[in-house]
Length: 196
Image 1 (cartoon, one colour):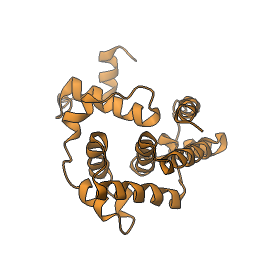
Image 2 (image 1 turned 90 degrees about the vertical axis):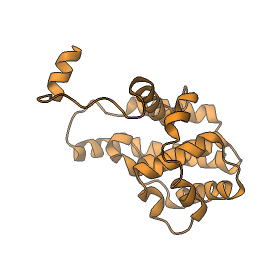
Image 3 (image 1 turned 90 degrees about the horizontal axis):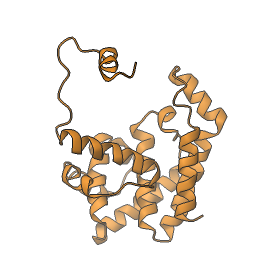
């Protein structure tokens, strides 16, 4: 498959995810299993790894995002569960080698520390990958200045995730939104926004 074909599959399966099924996590998990959501994301990940083996940098970024997202978000919300462990290690190994050779681009230089800062266990669960672990602990706030410079259009789940971060940075700055006032509730905020 081409990068464009895999991207189309990502958007197709994102649109099928039962996010709106506002139910218990266990039920949403079962629904994702029944609907083939988890299987679809495993296949998408495999396809990205195929392109990674051919030296496709964008596929590497997306595969790295997916293997991190599997750990950083509840499976029933991300749609990603039980990615092939050998393929995960392969992607981490290729990334580690790129770091060692000094050939990662600026996006990976700020994405990698961000991922580690949010969910270090996505990487620490494995032995080795020392160069990747080292760079993961550097420049954890680099994303604050570099993320707004990137384009995330048509980049699948990676694009959707980072587009949200980018909007927050542009709207609120790196510190994030101001804290809610005393007595604030999410229901009140919805009413204020007129979305109730």
